[in-house]
Length: 144
Image 1 (cartoon, one colour):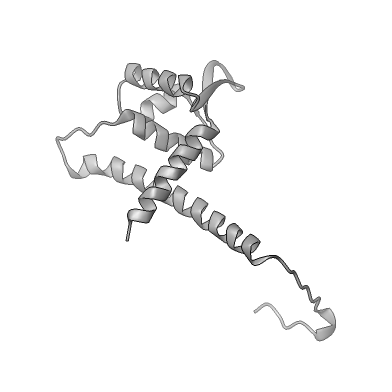
Image 2: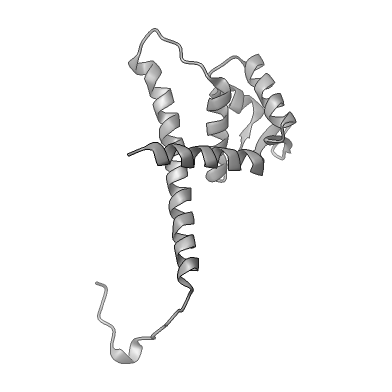
């Protein structure tokens, strides 16, 4: 402890909140943290399996891109289109096709990069965030 407070230095604060409000806040905090942690663990596991199983190629570029977008957005980061293509693990042509598909379905948008006029930033839309979070919640429920 830093130091003992004298009774004259103490300020008593009583906060009264409805139980439901406190429980909802705790659930939301736990869900967000566990969702992000689960998404990060999935990405790390997907990356490491190639190093463990030499000679095999694992490819699911669209899902890798979705997880990368989700984790980046949760951390307040964005990718430009070329970086996301590289993270997909597939060819640039395939990744661009998936980006167009995600965009046309309203799951992400592209915005001009303020730091590079030749580049576009990929921005996750609420529909994608919601779908990924529902999937992560379902996955978490099946885990022991």
